[in-house]
Length: 391
Image (cartoon, rainbow, N blue to C red):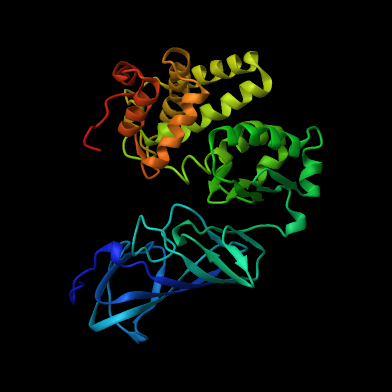
């Protein structure tokens, strides 16, 4: 039972949502409507502080609210079953972007998937990971929605679609990769991918301008900075396979707590390296290991941080040393001396499903010990750092 004036238990409330997102003349305007299964007297949600709230209604009547940073709290004079929030923010000229890292929509039940029906309109061409059915967009988890301005479909330098084992490549992209059979390379990689992951891959790869990073993997959509078009083979063999693996490791299975960046980035990078070893042989693999060793040795000076302690606010030098360098070498150590191979790796990944696809470093080591039959405390102490068993 939900008591009047009390914030309800989050599992009770998975609202039916309708969202309008309109971007014109650099103004991003959003209207969010949520209808609940039960009547409420109070509600809290989070919304990125960059947005200005213009109107907040309960059952179509305007009500007052309290806002502190990202936290918004409403308390109505009577019970309600629907809230409507209208808010906006200015974006740069020729920009229409809702990217990961901000809370773009009221987060009422964080951690729970929230289906939504969407109306999206802009005077700019855009790409989104929402599915368009009969003229209406839908998404299974609103918190995963991504929208980004981009070139028109036939003008994109990178435009690749993967559906299961089918690979479709646009003509401009084929021209960009004229030195290699891109569809063939991706098909070879998908053989490796499906040897580890059982879920069907549905993903588009699209270039956009001024992404700020080389590439980012979002649910069913990989965005690539336009500068990558100038070095297509580097993008293919250094970034693309890595970002596709993130569709499973990072987006389907989520890593949490201390050491999560080792699991998210170093693990993903090592899996890409395992594929490239199959593709190009031992000599290539050994050269890459020397590269990761160099990243570690060239950047470790001046830090006593461990892999388990790394956080994203730390400087790039620490990231290169611990996550890009030592982190990848640590996974190689597991393969070389701890009785780990691709069969065990697949067993490990399958166990992630049994754990609800939320994996901490502590749980990862526990599952790894279960799969290998080995005790790994010595490895953890030498390579990773202490694990907080309370997590």
